[in-house]
Image 1: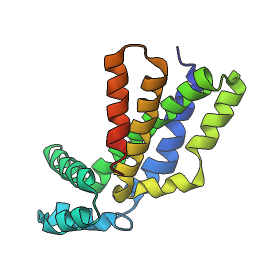
Image 2 (image 1 turned 120 degrees about the horizontal axis):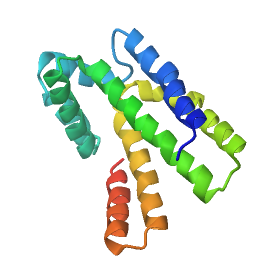
Image 3 (image 1 turned 135 degrees about the vertical axis):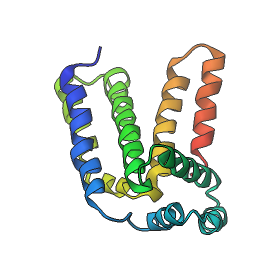
Length: 171
């Protein structure tokens, strides 16, 4: 069972450092404005060219999926993407909790410090841009894949772990 202190830290820090700043912005950041523009105009030719010439094939489909699902929920793309980033970042924190507890075998107080440092690391503010959503997703898929490969005896589960690592290499 995951201690409450870990759960509160994992939910609070990303909320304050990722979700609130993103919701306070009127536009997306950096190249994410291209995706936001495509979402608002419903013209996806520009992002198709942008992603395919950059060789980010899966990111194109992730962006399209995010746009279509945000339309279903009647949310703008930027805010819906912020919610997705928050959820992915929570998974990232819990994967790191697993690593700190079971692989690194840190004591509880060091696990709390480790997760606090990871979740408040200043470079993670770049994930507030929607262009970075796929990068974070690939990072999390790698952590999950490595955990599955390192801990599972079942060959089918290991195959799934290798597949997740392979998908993450699209970054």
